[in-house]
Image (cartoon, rainbow, N blue to C red):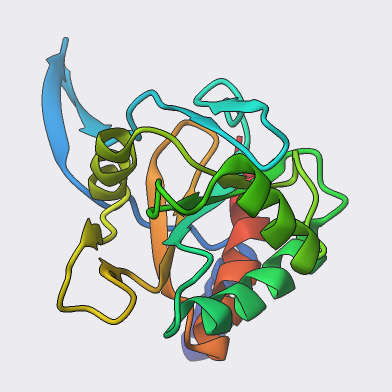
Length: 205
């Protein structure tokens, strides 16, 4: 009798845990602050930013405030990984195109060649529309700095094909500006995971 009771109890616990919404980790630096009798953890946030998108509109930290968003880095003349990553980004775009609480930001690291007009051409080529998917440019120092914030790579490298070295990963940011995931944009299964994880963050309060 006791064995049967324990078995039912364990089974109920397993079923309950399976029904819970999975939680995503917080990436980056963290600090602890004493708050009375408890210790609060302060997680890394994306710094304030200001860029210009393919329509000539400002895209800032206020644009994404209270929203879930995905960020990546590219340049329109990239001869290597960018086209492959952008094909995967289009899958993300298609999955959440009608969501008012989700945004995508693709940062160009070729500030000389990728003008607003060039980014507009590229966005049309991708069938991508702002304000849902923003292809942005800005000051070189600001673009490279925020790549560091996102835990991604973006820098000039004369030895790299195309003249730039950048990550092919996508960063997933929650409504409060915390990094909650990094996903290889060249791996379709990792992008499947990203699409799932966006839904998890959209449900978070």
